[in-house]
Structure formats: structure tokens, C-alpha cells
Amino acid sequence: MEVGQLLDWIRNHPGQLTKTIKEGTYRPSPVKRVSIPKDEPGKFRDLGIPTVIDRLVQQATAQVLDWAYDRDFSHRSFGFRRNMRAHHALRIIAAEADQGYR
Image (cartoon, rainbow, N blue to C red; front, side, top):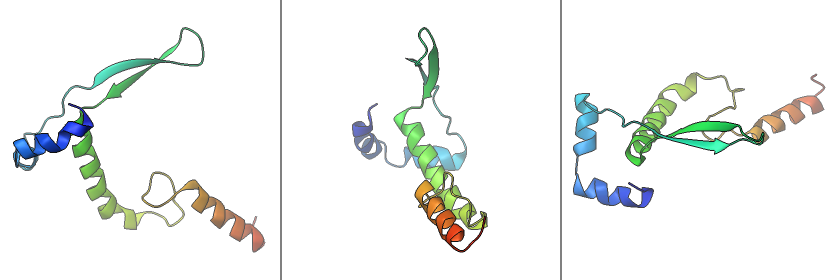
């Protein structure tokens, strides 16, 4: 299934995905294995590509966990957090350097 087909799938299977998750019977599908070439000739990197439905479930789970755990993280933790980017960290570093901190 392609991403553009997901909404139709959800409409044609109302509640099915939610039901399997709540019942604990949801099982992710095997990932599609793809090898992409590296810069070094003859070398490849293997990727595992999840299905569109599995990506939806992963993202929904990540959003719930994010809201549950984000408040416990250090205010100086910027990696892989909602609304936290490298440029935010750089601004803080620059501001503290301006205040004389090393």
C-alpha cells in the first residue's frame, strides 16, 4: 500500500486497526529489505522499510510516548525531541558564551 491509499484503507476497515491494537493482537508486518549503495564502490547499506500501516502505528505510539515522557527530560536535551532543534541548542550555547560561561 502507498501512503496515498491509507485513508481509503482506514475508511474501508473502520476500527480494525484500533481493535487489534487494543486487543493486543496487532503484529507488525515484515519490513521490506532494500540495499542502497554507499559512497565506497561495491559497498551497500541495508534498509528495512516498514509498511504504511506499521509507520502509522509507530508514529501514533511515538506521539503518545512523547507527551508522556517529554516533561521528564532535561531542558538541555535537544536530540529527537518535539520542537527542539540543533539551532535551539546553538542559541543557548551562544547566549551562555555571551554571559561568560565556558
